[in-house]
Length: 191
Image 1 (cartoon, rainbow, N blue to C red):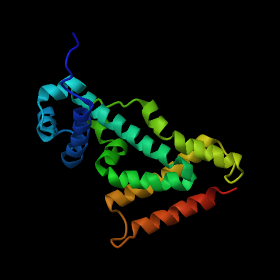
Image 2 (tube, one colour):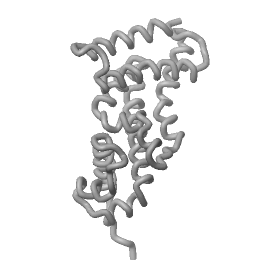
Image 3 (cartoon, rainbow, N blue to C red):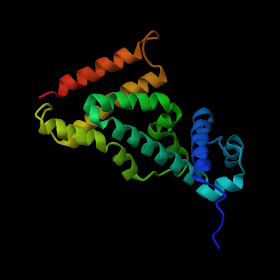
Image 4 (tube, rainbow, N blue to C red):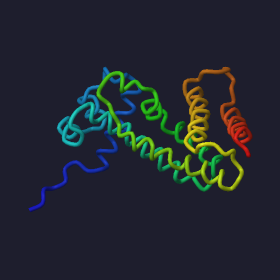
């Protein structure tokens, strides 16, 4: 006889979202499995059953973030480099807590949080594909794809990180700044 499903994917996703928010607000040291369970309206047993422990839960949060980010990049891939850049910022603004956890390094410094490197790499594959495609079409400078993709990623990532941290002029129009930066990136790498 099959064992009944007690903890489903919906609960798993709720726990991941709640954990990202709690860690972002209070830091990883202060978040307990009990806090996560209470915020999600479930038991600590459910959290432990689904994830095993705190480090596994935090690793799952980061990996799920990269999967979600990667899906947004795949959905934007038809828009080329410009579309990917716009989608990058949109995803980051919609998932600010998760973005900070994925790229802030706070988890690795506190607990054994070792996301699978392939998950992060897969999320960046649409960018590498867009670079290769633009180079093949003769619209992007010839250089190693990984180098160009990393340089472009660093530029958009840095600007989004500044926006989320609100580091810059107090009256900054971040959408306009970002659009200008995407245009500058395109011109800078144009063939």
